[in-house]
Length: 264
Image: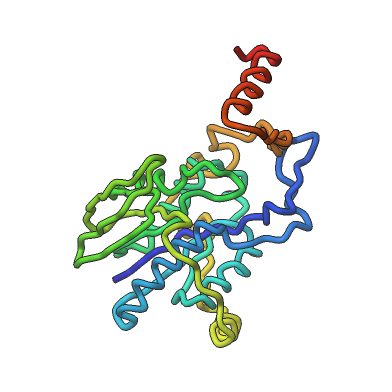
């Protein structure tokens, strides 16, 4: 079985600020990490590989600058077999549509895959659009928000998370599944895996714009139909008010407060 895993290097949102002029995220000097939901997708792939290590091959694919190799080395140290980095200035500035075009082109070049896994969304954009868009462009079925995955031959049964419950969906390979944090707990890198990853840089293949079948009008900043107007942290909520007394006294206090604020 050939499994592809989408992974993105993202800024650690705990330390992110925005440019007051452009409204875009300041990435300079900010620690970069493996996108958390993508780590869950990788763990799902590695758990499948654990059950049949001789017949399951896991390839991680990403798009980004050369520094993204650090994140890909982390994926290799966790247990992935190899990685592909789509890296070219002509990919730069891509929105979700343009990004999915490039990654889908890379996956089409890989070919012969059975299962593609990716995170629900990236913490630097929170759009949850790239995975579904890739599936559409590859012409394969997709299931999003997976909190459980079971495989029987070519049939994949997914427990799909909903706001008020879940649904069970069966899909045939090849297919694309996006994963949520509730699916699993990603494993840590081990020392042997780290040494192996850095001793064999050839396990990461870099493809440029010219290496994949894509047109310039399909990717990059100028090809992107959307752009970021501004990014900002929402204002913190005010402190809550704790009511005390009997049930009736607390009801009276609440009603008085709502009337005072002209809510009722």
